[in-house]
Image 1 (spheres, rainbow, N blue to C red):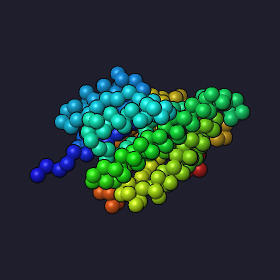
Image 2 (image 1 turned 90 degrees about the horizontal axis):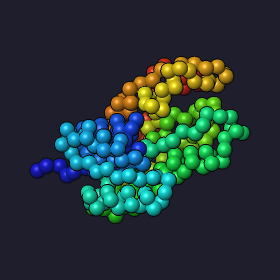
Image 3 (image 1 turned 90 degrees about the vertical axis):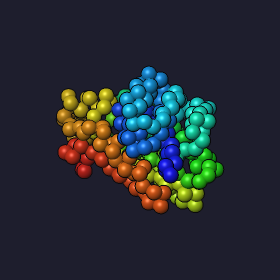
Image 4 (image 1 turned 60 degrees about the vertical axis):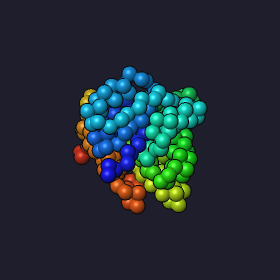
Length: 252
């Protein structure tokens, strides 16, 4: 008898880490709801994953908008009937400026997408996972190593990612009685469009500029796929995957 279809929902699935996570999950047998703000990259991810033979669904959504998030999860339920896995990956950077020069608008944007978006999606996933049969599921948040150690001129991003860690812990605690496992992956210098500046030099804690090594983003996809492959009675609460020689431990 074939195993039941497993359904994952990945935010920010059109590019970068989200794309590699979605493809790795598809290779691992998950059917995937591909969510993001732009349809074209999502459709490209779907085409690339089609060879795996699993189903995918493209849904444009803004994770910072409660109405959009509700519509996203409603589409997932309509298409697949359940959600077994949520990967909260969608994120945005802020201008690299000193804390006192960061505009309130840029602060709010970073918090809305990087933190409130995780909360809104987690909230909808909890509602579905508690009600579905069989009950339960898994949530994996992209925390970034900024959740542990900030970079200079990244106050909003660091604040949001530190708060994601607290939300991961709260969701893990509240999910226990409902068979909902929650974990977090903290990523350091995965090679994407957002890390191209690492090749020319980025600001260090001592005020100097330095080139930083990066790693293939597919390693993040593999790590998330491992976390997702566990039965619900096992969980990875926190996992860090990073370019080996990047400045992180001690930030230097």
